[in-house]
Length: 336
Image 1: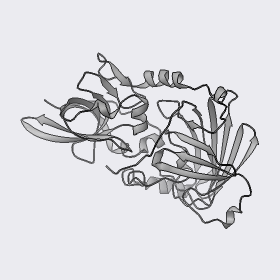
Image 2 (image 1 turned 135 degrees about the vertical axis):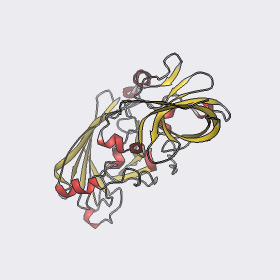
Image 3 (image 1 turned 60 degrees about the horizontal axis):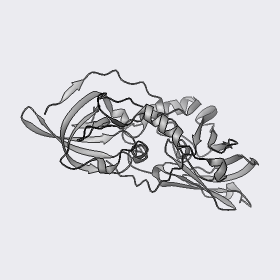
Image 4 (image 1 turned 180 degrees about the vertical axis):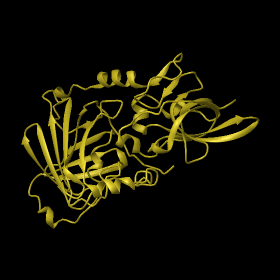
């Protein structure tokens, strides 16, 4: 078995996508083939250990899967597809910082099926049957949309990111101090890499699913990534100024109309906008607007973040989620 290095054009990623977890350390492309020694089926990315013969010597490689477990599961790439001792082919990017480490975008399984781990990618071994990938993700997402109008649950369900790649529209204009702070952001050593829970507004800007739960006087929002739980006070809310700061802040909501939920969050004690490295001060406030379509299958969102220390005007995020009938358990992040 041998290692084959392949020259690739580096993909141009958005600042947010390129900073996600540990992807920034991976460049170029590499293909290896070897025996599967170990499986780590957990978040933020499933991982594998593969033994490869190189020039008569045995070398052990650490393989990190591209997406979270949710991304694997939506693509039909399940744990039972991998058996210890299997011979696998792996294609992906190689780490510039850690020896014998690959961020895998494609794996050719022992039965000849290709698992496309990067959900917006096309198959690499085009002669094989495949799981996942951009075309299948898009088709299967459309097929999975539930009859939400018949269920008539409104906003109170699990909402899923529709696109195989990051499509959320982001706008920000940074102050000079924020630009300087961002330039010092460590793409490798940061809260996401340490499996530390993110705070608002990063909580709500991931591509993993969210659930809205009606609890009468409050709405509970669960986020799959990092097991986030938020409480939104809908009636008889105390004055936010009297509440202690926290990483999720203090949220107060109201219904603008029967299909539009508006949430204002302040008292946020979290130092970053997201894994982009943009700083946030304790003066930051977030306004979320969720607009439910008439057929209840789509939920548009718009977030506005005000922080005079970081932005010359409010930063915004906007896109939408779909009702796909997903369920999710615990994220259970583990440092790798």
